[in-house]
Image (cartoon, rainbow, N blue to C red; front, top):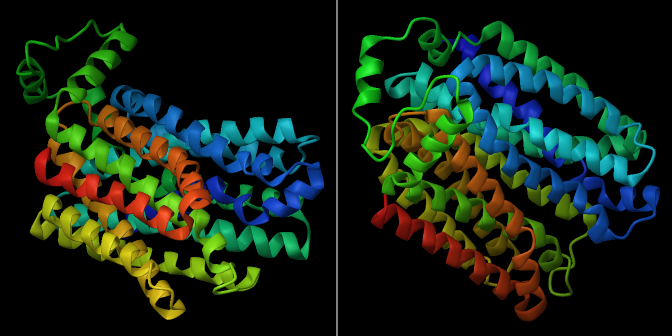
Amino acid sequence: MRIGALIALFLGPAFVFANMYTTQAILPVLSRAFRVDAPTAGLTISITVLAVAIGSLFYGPLSDRIGRKIVMVGSSLLITLPTLLCAFAPNFTILLCLRALQGLLMPGLTSVAISYVNDEFRGRERGLAMGVYVSGQTLGGLFARLGSASLTAATGWQVALFSFSLPTLIAALAMWRFLPDSQGQQSQRAPHPLHRRQRTAISDSVSDQPEGNVLRQSLSDIWFHLHNQHLVGAFIIGFTLFFGFVGTFTYLPYYLSGPHFGLSTVQLGLVYLLWLTGLCSPIAGSLAGRVGSRRAIAVSMSLAGCGLLITLIPLLPLVITGLGLLALGMFCTIPAVNLYLGEQAHKAKGTAASLYLSCYYFGGSLGAVLPGIALLRGGWPGVALLCLGTILIAIASDLVLC
């Protein structure tokens, strides 16, 4: 077991992915600082998620050609620059541009790491590594919310945003030092005859393009993956998974701070400690490697759906229990889907991972909007039932398409 590689796979997403949510817990402070209303301040989150969705389309194909590790390390190093500059943004427009740049660079790690793990690890080690990667993302989100809120209260929002540049740099250096060169890099240096035979076995509908025509080859790979029913099923699961997760936890404060529960801002912040259920991701990844990724997806998504239904019972202990089951189910689904991608993508795995992550984050972008409309029209039951509907679509995709 390569302990150094596992540590780097944890630190990378934990510190780099954290940049996505650094402004979420301090939106009221940013509203006052830049004199913008709450929905406008929320653009610092939605524009970053949208940029991640767009950027996810490019890094996978790039990593298929120049290697996974160089893309992961390079993009992580570059993120430190806009992270530093966010603290010195002279106006809100510049801050949004820097947040968008962070989002465009982030998929260099988040989308490529999936393919890296599937390439580099084997057997049960692969499931564990995928779980470590997902748990790093999970704790990164928690680290961002709690860290930025605490530092802003103690020092100010500028210092809070500036402080995230150092962990980002540490993560990039850890990956450079401890991650072995990816299989993609090795195959670039010395293509194996088996790889050439596999490429010629691809369907006649997708022909290999000249090596110099990168764009045409990338489009060919995308077209090929979109005609793979199993991968399309995984893309749908990714879209619906993040839609439900973002929708639930974005509008949860309105439910819990309402007249029925009346939780304070501090108490609401503590609810996000449920993200610690993401620490179960390594175990979930290992189990998915044993029982099969499709079976693991069905079980974990069913668990999430049951948790969402429990939140409809207006008793605080039951609501918290339901949210815990929802979070646990979501975080256990992610490594299983990531493993499934590696099993089904027989060519251009980086491109397949990019398509999946793009669908995943586009789902999150819509999940930050549509459940809000459901909240206005139907209260929390409207949000819960809409998100439950997406979970049922994910389960159906796992049963029918995968």
